[in-house]
Length: 71
Image (cartoon, rainbow, N blue to C red; front, side, top):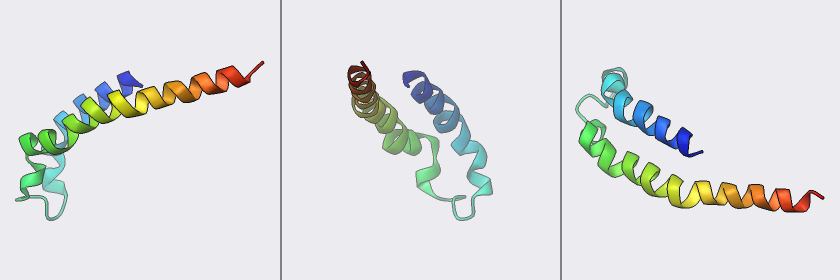
């Protein structure tokens, strides 16, 4: 799951917003679609905190719980 988070961060959050901003109506002059603003407000908190501290440990607990139930 960590590899998915890292690849999502690199491909979708670092590379994509600048390339698709002109295709999304209303996002041409929106400050939230600028690279620095996008990374600081969405990408870094999501991948640095959300995945690392919430999703990956929760998925590990679920898998361990399922494995403990299997005889």
